Length: 276
Image (cartoon, rainbow, N blue to C red; front, side):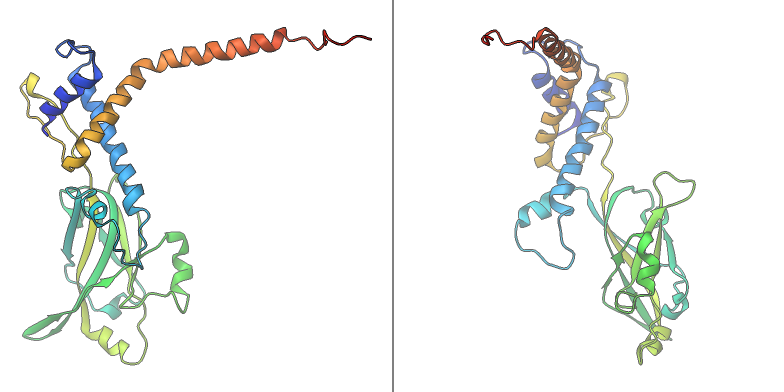
């Protein structure tokens, strides 16, 4: 559905029938309501599908919802680490990456998952390993994890912390800890393997819709999945009705509170039915 069709749909259901062509609400105001509704819809889907997923269990139920919930916004990016050193070269320092550098012009709304793979280079040929999952933890627990014998990172189970980049609103700094890998046989392997790629899956920031045809501009359509567009527009209509009826609702609430206060003030402690 294009943004022009969304505006027609919105006016059909948000205004009185027969008044669709009366400019009771401006196009830019409709755009604001739709963009707000898009964000609310995405948050609801994330909380329902992504936020409740256990990363240690491969679920087989509700495939339809999980695959198609945010299909057009779910992206995967493979970033080749430039001049990636050996695994042991990151023994006492993390592999630090920048989300802006990894994503380029794309913008991530939510990071979902990360994985890493290595390359064994021996002159003419180079062999790439399988993907290994990266555990994402809070930075507050980083020191505990690094010093824990069981939870400490290793080449096959690295650990990542994510925090906001300085002097940036949206960019993030990613620190990947590959561990010490001092076990027998592992140390030799960590000396020969170099960091090759980091794979990230994320939910992209949705398009901010704009209806600009009436002023000679270029429209920006929504990139939500088709099955979410009508529920999103219904939510936008609800937001519009709340905005125009909010003051009336508040006045009704105040009137009800004043009436209750009046009843309390007129109450008498005596009992007319009691006789001494």
